[in-house]
Image (cartoon, rainbow, N blue to C red; front, side, top):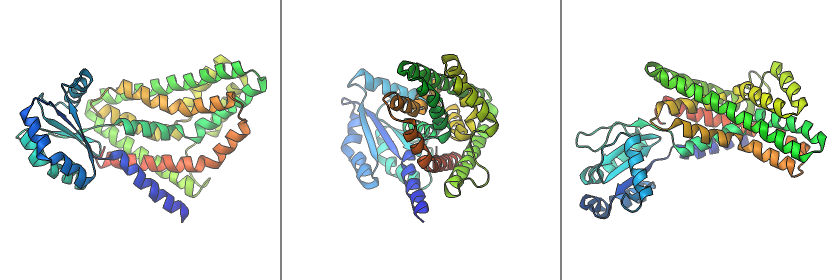
Length: 352
């Protein structure tokens, strides 16, 4: 019963990843902007529906103007203020002009909470939504993806051979080399998949839905592992590959660390592939800079490896780290499983 209650609590928490938000671009010298700001509609919506709408003056500084231009280009909006961009569970649309904002904002918020933004108006009010992937979603996915027993186990396994040498400098250099190899391999693999999905424009939606189904399947398997560990099918590094990993880890040299990083990045895809493929499909379908988001994702992905290396370098015993990993691996599977389920379902329903 406690496990079930914990799962329900996490489901409610993950819901905030797809929250409704807004940003209003205006200028102090614009009479139409003043109409919106003085109408009280922004305050009413924030107080009534408990959402946040940020107001940004495009003439205040260059940074604000650049942000305004970025939104126009990303979401194919015409120039002009006031303009209010809306994020309804990852679907982005905009209201442009004082009359559309004042008259349609509350209606849009209500539709979002019930159906999502799907209405379009000829008066320049609401445009067709674009699927969007947000920074909070990227960071959350990468962080959850990074906390997987597969990556932790290999890192601890490698460090167990390095610590026998009693050479802290060597531990640091070989450990950083391994992490760098994992980062580069994972980034390049993701970039290749990302560009491939983009190139097949006619079947992007099909690939997107396949990625969603894979995420749901992987998520269900991970939740199963939490409830019924070591029973039935599980997602883990194949046993046939563990001997290869062991061979290169025992060498504990810089070249072997590079090879190990490449091999582990490929072998651990059963553990991490569900989230990564879903995020890559979202990136390919969104009008954003996928290279930048991929770089951020993979930095977060390898961050826990830096933490493990730092703890080992500072003197923390590997037995302590391994004990922590073993006692928490089921919870890692649960959190990643629930996230993948919600991510896949959100993709299928068009929520993100």
